[in-house]
Image 1 (cartoon, helix red, strand yellow):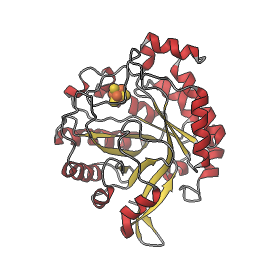
Image 2: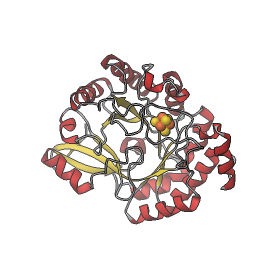
Image 3: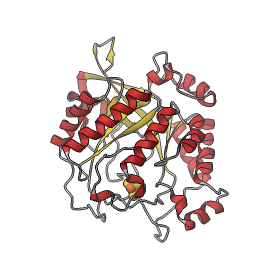
Length: 335
Ligand code: SF4
């Protein structure tokens, strides 16, 4: 945990982002997901370039630094998705994503892409245009909620995180708490994240996210993850993960005050402009609300989607170097 020298209290970080859900079409069928749509559903979509550009433009005006691009996983496995993608001028999702990242950089925002499991080559392709990337491990356990989700096989997800490490990509991962895994499973998941970081030094944060049931899903009646489990998991994360890996909790899904006292140090991306499309019923707090919640026990500081230690280590490409230096202060936080 970093200490603020002026107040001698701990530093809690957040990033000011815009959330861009490029498509909700996904090959997986996670039992708790209220986001994914199949192409035969009227609500299935791919955002068009001008829609994305409009959000980026507004995000810049709101002082955001992070463009968070999320996807359903490997939507290109659905031929109908590919047809729709061709209509907007692209043959492959990652080529489209590459152009959207360039658009974000041009507007002065740093991309953080979250397109699901990826190969080494796909990660290498996207690396130059990303300040950081992410993939939730969720759990190393084999659970019913993932029975029809080929991308949720733990081994495949671990491979993606490991390949990001080989490529020196600052990386976000984490656990989804309360989806059918046991406490021991969580310990095992955290130990794997810790090992990957010890080997490659690339994990900047581990999200400890509580399951919240979504209406209309198979797990709509499954109980939400209780605060006691979150406290235990945050404590385990702080104990198992190396000190330089931040423990992040989502302040729109769980009250962060108590979790900070148990080891949480980061609040993730919060947006003054866009909603949390994965959990649309849970509003982001404003920065002021967050500051009040945290009180006098800690100092809230804004960071970029790349953490200060990775700026110091030079874990970024020439393409985004100038923008990072423009947005960061001398300590690597938001200028
Ligand atoms: S949780 Fe993610 S991977 Fe699973 S179905 Fe939903 S969008 Fe797809």
